[in-house]
Length: 401
View 1 (cartoon, rainbow, N blue to C red):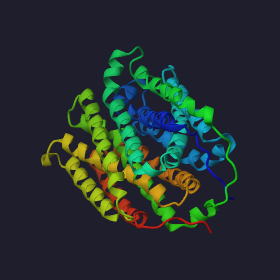
View 2 (cartoon, helix red, strand yellow):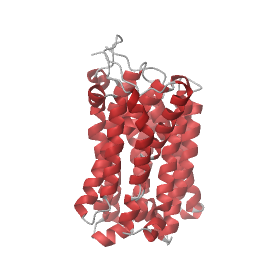
View 3 (spheres, rainbow, N blue to C red):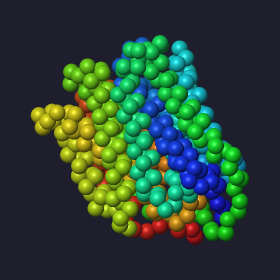
């Protein structure tokens, strides 16, 4: 059924600045609540008696929320409008993050699922908001907001252990403090609510779910997103533990993860600009996967060089792969409505696949006691990512039937 996706428009240059500020602050808040778990994992494990598998579940839960909620996002935008749905997402993100300060295991896991739900809405809506609000500068805005996601993840990873030492409540305070920037993002987004409109019927046929699930191109984009996110969240959850197994102190291991996330900012900024210059992106994909293999080999073989070098290279590649996946959602569709629907399908399937990553990696380490097996798993994921990515990066769009 045809429809249009509502916008939350500003008026003139001032409105554009407010919208851009809201987009960038929202993007900043889509990773810190997850990125803090890896550096604080050893403290949480000892305080709560969690196994590596259960600790991995704390990273997996948000991904499960991404997978289950994303596909339904267009239903909420049709009912409440895009601006109000985004505001609700930020409220869920703030409340869920703050709940982790409560002294129960149940509140830790419940809060994690709540903020995961909020992030799921934000993940799906941001590409559509950017496409409609900045249609002539989509590549630039994709670079900026995916870069801001990397900034949030890098700061959260690097500051997690120092904040746990400085804040009341230790690691619980370090987890919950990230509710404050989420509330700031909500306040910055609030002006968009004054301009919110209910969606109105459109005249251009939109892609239906049946078409999406029958499209090989849509599946290639979804699987590429999922495999990319699988690797990203394994690194986010377990890289500090890998570094500590090599004798690094917890603070130093947290900063290695922060370095990895910070280098991902460069990849996020550069790849969409590079990808936007040509209708196909297969050569970009080849470079990304090749560099990823080099980085994984470096982490697997300590004699090849310092872990910081390979962690930074891996972060650069994963940041670039993520922004490429976001870029493909838009260029493989012909309208904002189609981009929203493809985004929901891609992120639902993709994150359900990614959700298995931290848990499987933790379980694999529990069984083997060796991080080398986890790195071999990431090699296999990279190979499948190359296969699906080549199909997703070929020029073309998913068309309604």
